[in-house]
Image 1 (cartoon, rainbow, N blue to C red):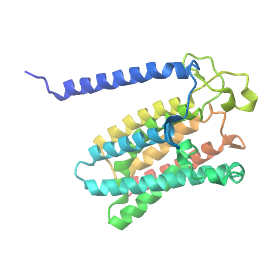
Image 2: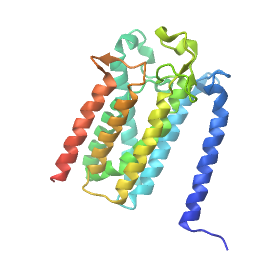
Image 3: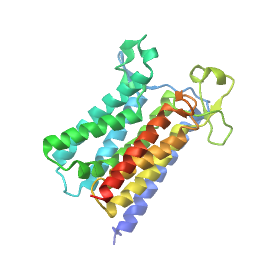
Image 4: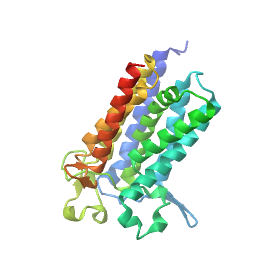
Length: 286
């Protein structure tokens, strides 16, 4: 007889994921070590390039939507999840790009035609959070749904999407850290290295650090969904925990703009932590 118990299915899924990760690691190793050059373009269809960054963002978005569907358990309809996801994606992309362009305006003011080139990178996660949450708030009001419940339902999928989406930074060779000789060091092409580090070859893959931490965050959020408390508490913890891990990862990066002792992303993370603590305290007294 076939063994279709939940435990056997869990082991089968885990083994499949392990095989996929191992296969990806073997495929990426020559590019990671600098043996083969990395191209940000996956393939070219006529004059239209398809970038790895855009493809990975699409996979990340689809994965986040799938997880949200699995967690819904009939609390909202498929149509409502789809509509909410579309608005969050649109709002998140606009917010992410808008904030990034604002922070890099001296560059984009000279090349305004590049502002709409989303698939080449250049997205601010803090802008994505503001745009996505703002869009979700608008949709919940329009559809007469409970925003806090909808947000709690959405953030695990958001964490999963972030964990996957960070791999787009590898193909663009961006969001890396300082020089290192650790076993997991990543080769960066000379043209993409900071001017002051042109003689260095290998750097911290900080986007991988953040991806791993995003997976840990996802596990925490999923455990919270098993024992739900007040509506909005999962959103609050997501804001606090993600901003905390992002604050830490920023110490390794060499491409971040700074104001005083912290980078812009760290200041933004601190502000979001304050918002998360406020929401958590508000919900605990609701």
